[in-house]
Every structure is written in C-alpha cells, then in structure tokens.
Image (cartoon, rainbow, N blue to C red; front, side, top):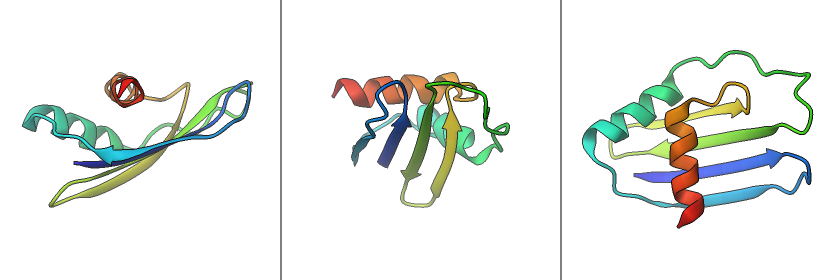
Length: 87
C-alpha cells in the first residue's frame, strides 16, 4: 500500500510530509481504508494550534484520501501516523 501523509499547523506551523510504501495485513489495511472512506465530522475552527492531517492511501484496487484535524482523527489513523513517523 502506498501512503502520503501531510501534517500542517500545530504550534510551530512547519508542515511535515511522509510518503512511501508499507506492507499491511489484510484486515489492518481494510480498517485504514474504511476510516478514510467514512465522512469525518466538520473541522473544528476554534482548535488553536491544532494540526490538519491530509491522508492518501493507494492500493492495487482503491485510492482513498481524506482530511482530518486533531479533534476528529480516528485512533486507527493516529496509530498509523505514529508508525510511519517512527520509520
């Protein structure tokens, strides 16, 4: 699975971008894709120093992308981002 994650905002406001290929188990991949296909709640405009997450995942059969902020980022995607930041 190919991924591209852009994180903007935060206290410093310096954008970070992560891009690469990651092999995931079938069920874990399905969970991440379903998080992106679900309609996230609206962005919290009053979130000070919050971050904006632009996430795109591409598999052989699907191409999914969505935008989240700190207030509505699902736990599965938060764990995924932590994992790719550690690589």
